[in-house]
Length: 631
Image (tube, rainbow, N blue to C red; front, side, top):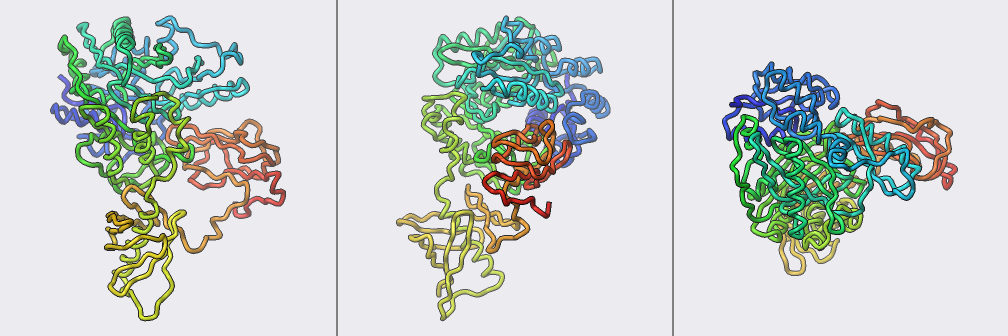
């Protein structure tokens, strides 16, 4: 029997496993990097062991340190979570050799399936030889052999960029998984990403717990997942389940695993088998009424699964809330998560709580929100509304994108589910949501009410000019009235019903709407689901930068500079100049226009904050542009 379990991971999945352990009466041990010293998974564990350092390669990818931590803390079992070492056969052997229970599949099964190249070979599918790829083979996908989550993946549409993308994908995979092996395969345009959840015991029982659709993805990382996959023909679904079961039996699989497919033109193309629990496992748990982590522990203890697979019920949808800006190339965001609260009736899996900081070292996912309903339509409606009502104060997130995605006709009707969803629809989905003017009015009046409460003042016999507050593109004009209220002069047609520092009620076209307002000292104001930033009345001249300046779009580390790049070089628009690593992903910084590189402040290993000057390109259209003298 397992009595004390160490989770060899961090964040959301560690908290998820700890939750089940509490229910089962199993004590828990966390490991943490220096960057995670105050993290939620550390606070929730019964004991915690420090892994000195911050980078994954120094901490969560060090299997020797994790096994030593388990032994030091008196753990008798190790759960790998997902990511990091979860699909590392050598780590599994190290755990077993140390006399600990390994909550995962046998090392031989991991070796057979965890490497995507070897898994394909097992099924008779050969990857492409990069040296022999021709224009006729395009597009192709460069893919990391280990790990997942979209890291180490690149779509290549031009032969001239293949070598560069191979190098970039390998570097990203090595950083994220400790394994830089990549391979090349044909890229299937706009197929559906469908997977099958497996659970197997050591006595020959194999459960195929239905299908999941994970087609809505950005940068090859999943955004919205659901179970069961809607609209699959019965014969195709049966084929997917049968293939998954045969793959598991072929390698003597034990534990939880997932077989992934790309479905296009009525055919299923095998992608890989993930020999671990998946991030999106909650939707399967909700539909089948099971706790997959509890079952993992039972199987690891040698228990038998019931012979019959549980029956499914209803529909579940999960949305991944990321600290990122979809309108700016999915740029990850950092900062304090000042308030995080979701409505009742929503399953929340997270590694953060109000007051926690979102840093640069790890994945930008804040949480997963999952709902279950009797029908798919009911689940879509329920999740979209829950996301709208959630209070998420802090860095920019993809919350508005999630709501818009769920309500988009292609998704809401399941009429067109495929991996090209965001390629087709991103501009429309990232349009600012309606109601911004009213939210800005509420922010302005709440601020005015707060000032009035602190300093007094109000209506005067001599009519003064309007007060002005600007939030982004919204300029608000208002004045105090004789009765202690306010009159809004711009935008027109707004009547103030009530105004207080934390709540404002406004009437437009005969409809009264109430707004909860929370303002922070940095000028950020959250009004319902709107995140506004007060614009200062005067521009700080120190914030001005020279034309052609390339500023860091996010905090991170410079990992590479283009070979041979030097001040004085001519560059062309879109040419990659350097690469930043932030939140385990590489982000390419390119020349904004053709011109001459007049300054280069980036060097490999340099840590940069958001807005830091990286380089200056003097464009041909601006021959008078000069380097920023303050750089």
